[in-house]
Image (cartoon, rainbow, N blue to C red; front, side, top):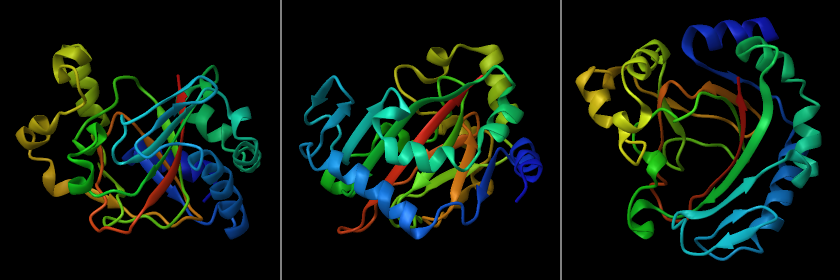
Length: 229
């Protein structure tokens, strides 16, 4: 897809999958880099890179927050070679904050094993407006926790935001499942199956959800790159 085609789809539906962005060796290199970090962490740990590890706060697996791409140089080098900046600036504007935050997770526990769902496994839209790039380090589908979303709902959440603060909408969490039901949006849900060589981009003002791993022994490794206006 050309950048203009990607931008057109983003502006129309709010998400886009670009096929065959990464080679198999690039995916393996990124997976190796992330695995070295995960191997230093306890089960259930959340790591704010360069600062601290909190134990027992992420029961679904392991989670890392990076403040800068330089903390994962292999991944940064591979991603920056893909020249996504024109897409980011074309969507968010020339003065946007590119690659502002990088989150990554390795999830390998079912809802039953973890003792419940993570907060992003409820229908929500993000507290801040962002365009996110998702790099999946293995093929991802409904069984190992693909993203699910409702296309063309940005106009709905913009209206909701104009009427209430995010805290009034969601309380102290993300959950807006009541709104999805009230608006009769469930028939429009898309399960976003993504191959590891692909790149997913989406607008976080869409109603979206991270699904749960459904079978013991499955895993999902993902790197999420946040961009804001």
